[in-house]
Image 1 (cartoon, rainbow, N blue to C red):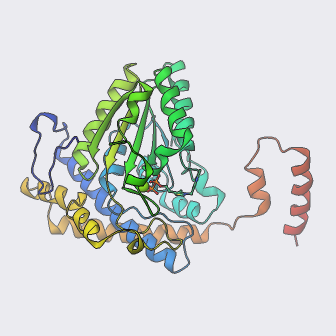
Image 2: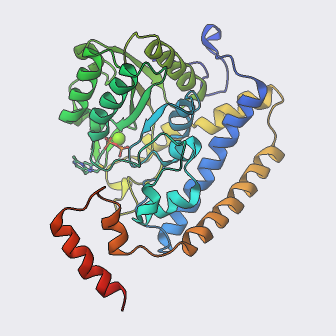
Length: 347
Ligand SMILES: Cc1ncc(C[n+]2csc(CCOP(=O)(O)OP(=O)(O)O)c2C)c(N)n1
Ligand SMILES: [Mg+2]
């Protein structure tokens, strides 16, 4: 397992420490703290009935944000349902992320210049799409990558194998993340596969694979940077397995983690917390203080408050809006339905 920063916030691998400025290091910490607050607020808003679908992210910040930090604006992001943080840092306004949660179509409309699709709910489907997007980039001679994420459970899907195999065959510039948080809802990874690691699945596709400490933001960043460089230089795709953990439930729809996870396991992983170890590292360099942290927390709370307000004020979704956003040209049967709904909505 590739690691740079250990649980105590100490560098264990001098050679691979990424070349990041002090400002960049602080920005990474800021994003992780912000995202932890966003997770807590999203859970609360969901419980108040003010958000819809939500998949908790606490524990996975290093895996999610360390990888996104290594991307360029023109890279194309294909996230899964838990990967809303990457989308936000790639440029999706927060109020739109909230609208996505509520099932409003405007949550799926990427602003100009944000190269991404909305989070995929079908497990693994984004892997095939990422291979296609990456091949398109290659054919156009673009020096960019397509980046996608799935979970440990996702690696059992056919689409997972199809995606990595296709991208491998065409040396398409894709980066495939497997965020191994050890559970697919309640199913532990040991029951998911007999493979010793998920990264080794890359071998069958003839592509590079690496297992990374997903609680170590520097390791995730460095691995992604490396994968990106290889890919844009025509050396083909890469599979990155990040070893991580979700502290919360699978989603807010009602699973109870105490029924499938032991307290010992939770405790073991909380000791590896990505924010704790990175904070220790930055504090030792005099780059972070309690004051910095509190400032980020307050800023995050305020921005979240404004974003939810804006989402509340956004016009309610109509059935005709939904239909108008599905096709460039409506098929005749939907045209008929469109007329019917227009009539209903006018009343
Ligand atoms: C094709 C498909 N099958 C089943 C589901 C239901 N489902 C939603 S999440 C999930 C588990 C996914 O686990 P994993 O890939 O480990 O990702 P994680 O949620 O842990 O991030 C399942 C089976 C689905 N959304 N799509
Ligand atoms: Mg999982």
